[in-house]
Amino acid sequence: MQAPLQQSFRFRTPEENPELTETRKLSRKPTAEIISIGNELLIGHTLDTNSHWIAKHLTRLGWTLERVTQLRDSLDSIKSCVRGSLKRHPSVLITIGGLGPTHDDMTLAGISRAIDKPMRLNKEALQLVRDHYRRLESKPKLTKYRTKMATLPQGSVPLPNPVGTAPGAKMQQSSTTLFSLPGVPSEMKAIFRASMIPYLESFHTTRPKEVEIKITGIIESALAPVLDQARKTYPRLYFKSHPRGREAGIRPLILLHIYNVEPGAEKEISEASARIMLQLAAIRA
Image (cartoon, rainbow, N blue to C red):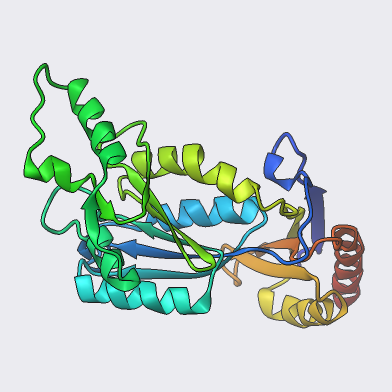
């Protein structure tokens, strides 16, 4: 005997997800790209949780993340990838990793080559580095390895690092604002919160509204044609199903997420949710 079809859905409240609160509107969502740099990512030694974390925050702020790229520690690779991204003119390009004092920290040098701006010792960045080491040592010395972290592409604005040593950097290249963040997750998050979120919020985007529908008693291949019809009927919404457990299980479970991809489509979510549930009920009738 087949298990009965069950569906439940709920709107996430602002208390649970404050990012779903609508604030301001923009006719076209600003776009972003991420370049995550480090050999450790490509040999399977380190999982790129940084990009995942930033992706969630960009989405919550109403931004569209177009691409995430992982690179080796290579000047040529960084130069080529940054130039390729800049040709696509994202509103923001974020690089992660490679800002430290060691030989393989070469992100800023690679960016320097990509945008044809020489590396220069930045006095403001040097002061940030000096202040950090003064908290650790009674008589700090600014060695070449420490001053390396204060050497930025000409015209860069250093971003204070509240929990670490290497400052981040902000650069403007044509219509793209480029942010370079350290790869240590705690440092990346601290700079992102302090320096990037105010910038991202200045674009006055509409934050997406999201609904989660829990569906049991049906497998994903049976759900697929229902979602295809929903996508055609509601092109301003995004539908994504996430199977949980095995299809051959007693009660297969699917989590369906629906959210608006365009301003003004928030009201369509409840209508689409109701239509999907009615169609699923008809399948099992």
